[in-house]
Image (cartoon, rainbow, N blue to C red; front, side, top):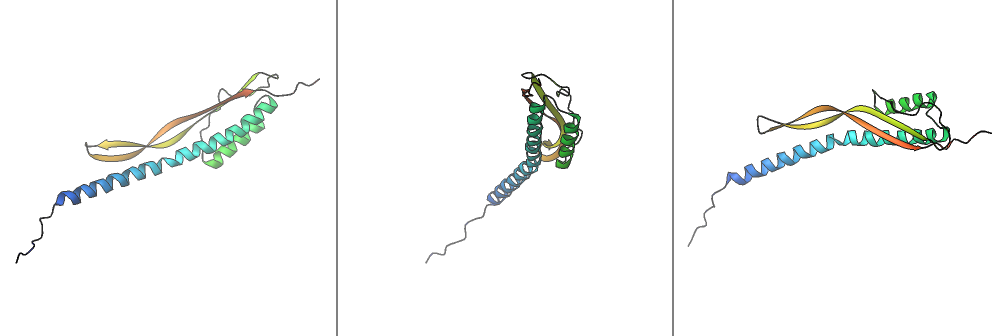
Length: 141
């Protein structure tokens, strides 16, 4: 009668599995943490589109619309808004109107320390949104 002996175990399989689980977990944390800036940019583009349509109708972005837009962007959590390059004075029918918004947002950056240790660090990046259209302001007789 033969006795079946237990086969020798291999720690390599356990170590490889742990390394794979850690790498997968770190990758998931990295991508989930970078979803917040993507969602913020989508919200900012929605607000900018709304005010681009108003700018198109009026022929320029009025001071009241500028303050309303900045207020809406601050409610989203966006600060340090730069609107340089935006059409702020009235233009005639058919002329181009522009709305240019830039702001800084924190993006997680992946760096490798000491050759093997991955680290996440915040990096402030400038996000720019440009919209252009044609003035539809009616000519007053």
